[in-house]
Length: 187
Image (cartoon, rainbow, N blue to C red; front, side, top):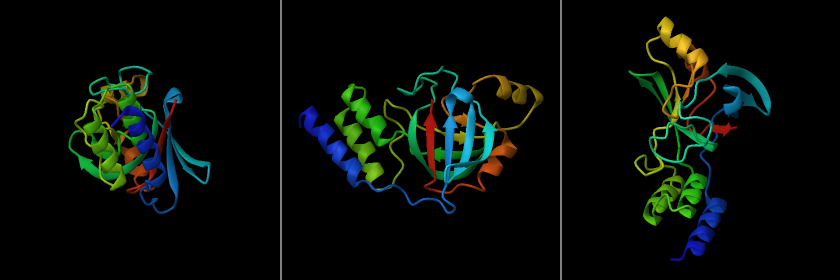
């Protein structure tokens, strides 16, 4: 298949692809990287706002595994689970179809890897987490809270690409979300 046909099929699949069922309450999370804020919104109105720490790799959007960058784009929550390391982990469906299209055009992933990411989104599954684009992107707590960890969290971006909140804040966040909640990460 030539590249233009693949891109055309990808665009068509975006039109056909059904987004996950919205969480009850129609809440949306918006992460503003430049402000280091996570906003809980309903019908465009901000209900809550939290300070966040982001990936320690800088301000660019995530491009590859291990770059320690936080992605930009629209994602959805796939699961919420307890975490020994981070108190709680909210998994996002990164990489998105858009991430995969861009990576395929730039030869950062193979056609087979692209197809696996696309298929996962079409069928409502978590996309492969082991492609060159990386994975395991989510929203999490900071684990055991010590004075030093809290200080670092307040002044520095320290994650490997995820979005981090204080433990009590991530617990508050879980009252507004469920599988399928949209998470928009903007500059």
